[in-house]
Image 1 (cartoon, helix red, strand yellow):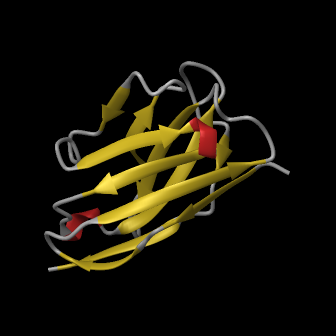
Image 2 (image 1 turned 90 degrees about the vertical axis):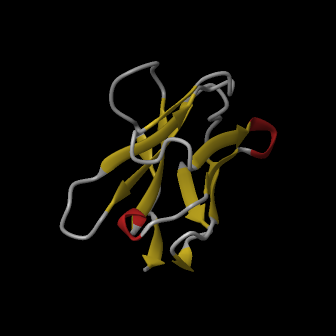
Amino acid sequence: QVQLVESGGGYVQAGGSLRLSCATSGRTFSRDDMGWFRQALGQEREFVAVVKWDGTYTHYADSVKGRFTISRDNAKSATYLQMNGLKPEDTAVYYCAARIGRSGPFDYWGQGTQVTVSS
């Protein structure tokens, strides 16, 4: 059974930091691009960041550029999102996702982890 399980969410004050983790199992994700998305209450899910299967390329949404860092450790089947300088507008459920192809939609999704940033 393919699983992506996020962890590390929580409650933090503005300016604080959190590190999200995504653990994968059920298939080999080491050749897949991995991404993070988020969905705030009442809003559509939006792209946050993506890392290429080998870690050599990353891309970020403008809203998080310079504050968030995506990384992966294929030996541990894990992907991370380091979030610094958090703002109240970063409050959302954060989802980890895997993409088999080099572009297009993501194929596998986790259940999400809540991040709440207070002002």
